Image (cartoon, rainbow, N blue to C red):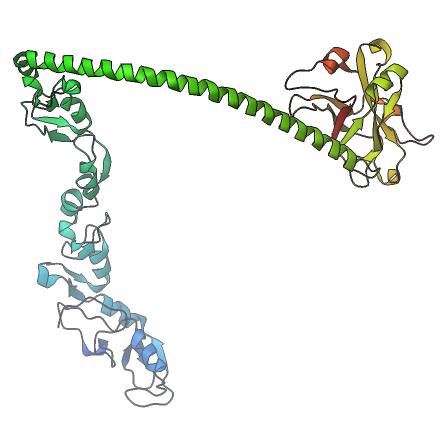
Length: 449
């Protein structure tokens, strides 16, 4: 009987030590039955797999006696008898001398210490197939995927990488000196440093910058210099003469260039002044436009308001108030007020500024008392920088008459700063900052509730 790898779609196709009895053979595949079943009608044996295939093809009668009932049942006793038969290893022709009971075949073929002639796949990852007896040597000495360390830098990796791409990059890999000097080999990372000292490296003459184009090995440089002292001195003298002529010419050009630069700097200064004036004018116009367009009585934060007639308010001690606005859509109604003469202890020395709550159309929808943080900014009218700002917080420390809902009258007590900004800082004007301009101040208010 031919030796073949066992399959699960037929009986046991092994080489048996002794010929199995005919009563063990399947009537379909004619091999010793795998998982044997007996027919009730005629007592013949079928493999479970052969029986299933027969029924799958639509056969409803016994394939031996054509009995229409075709009733079968598992024969465990016969199964034990067949599995107890002795068989040779499927690798007998390759040299394996093993022969034992059939039920031990799988352990013999599948275990790591089993049949040494069984074909197995490399366990490291290269997918090579070999007999088990060669696996250990392959994994340890032949497999391109085995893990190894570079003998020079000791980095770890697959053998095929370490001996391939890594060898072309390894900083410790010994390389021969390209000039074949007596040092022999140098590590890749030290090669450039070696070349800067190598006595056989080709270099230019030290007098290259004055015209000597000779090249020689580094060790021959001293002799070259000794043999060409006169020539080097002549080259240096000619180079100095040319340099003096060039310096003289460049001096005249430099004087002319300096005059042009001075003229250009003057024009640039005028342009910078004009640009700054334009920027200042643009920012001032922006403030006027924003103050004109935002305060309508229904505007929401952030808002910009304009305080006009500052001198008149100061002389007449008039308390200035902005138009009303809302903190947000359907929010708290407020306004900004300022006293140019100052309030209380700061009268005459500071400008005072406050926020006032007013009776609004949406008070029934809001949470009381008011809680939030406001930022009041006195805007620089020259540029959008160097503004003066303070934070006004409505919290548990805020007096109730400044944060509660208005039930009587139309506004609360003010809440802010008596010392908002000193008159000294208010009137101080520089090239980049001016708060008071054209007898007006601009305030901006933002809020976070």
